[in-house]
Length: 462
Image (cartoon, rainbow, N blue to C red; front, side, top):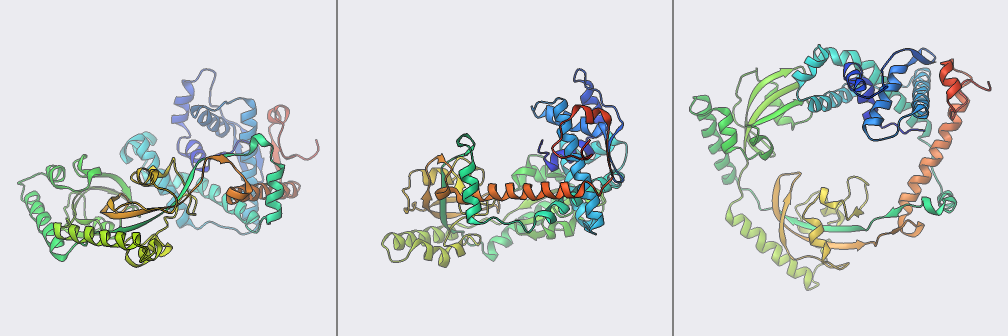
């Protein structure tokens, strides 16, 4: 079956459903969006236009699209409707606040693609609030189906013996090739910002704000010249349209007290000192600009951090303290210090990093570990923490490194176990579907019955 990416399919079928899809479809020869009911599961209907819109999305992503693709998409939709029906029977629900959060994410995404919230509203000819109201139930049903699916498989586990049987049954050409992976640790020191450093930054920003308020300088000029936020500085301070929950609480607390056109007082967040100009607000969505000045670490603090990490490095090198103990004792990186400095991969949840992708998280890491042997550590070097907007110094240790290889139980058991678990979950889902077909009213258009070979016997033995 075609595996539909839930995020992309919702965008394609719901938010891009209608004029956008029609316009795009008109540019593709022999592709015309028409509408009729092609299937029904209980009270839930599936439209031909939904299937064609999803096929158009696949075509735009470079995938083949033909009648068999339509059949696979239809079956995925029927499965989803069956899940929704059963969720209602089992009294499984998705709270409205969760649906609203999901809706906000999608609205933000589409607005970014189109250009702005205003362009989104102009395109649909309705307000953001109306768009949310129109699509709320559709997104809720999608989330309800996913919750039901999780309920069906929540108790599925695999034993070590099942994992081994699964791996042995894999055809040789289906066993994945695994890139080189590394396990790394770090000991980080950040120069300490003093109260004096903070006072200097705040005083400077107060002066800039005064120039703006008294008309001696435009807000845009102030942001371009003085702001320490590189992303918004190039846009004259504009942060673009944001929604509640995307900025730190202190920032949003100020935003939602302002009226359009107002300029805030100077306030502090973890990034430094700001003042904001609110441009517009629509419900939980807001458009604002800001000027940020971050406290600068003074030279004495940098010198102290450098001397300290040099001393720690020498202590580790002489064997007076282990790297792991030093990280737990001295490191300022809260995310890794209690692991002996080991850095967790946020994508996998373990300590293994694909060496080809680590630059996405830490561009400075790969060059550091490239010349290290397993168990060795680097000399102190400068470190820029992009996610927390901090600069410091650090020592990096290469704990382990695997060579590129064909997956095996000895080296890649977690990966193989996940694949075995997914297969077992699919078996459970297949059994569940087959057990529910007879108890649900299911109707499929004769054209699809004639042309499609479906995985499940939705209409029984006909």
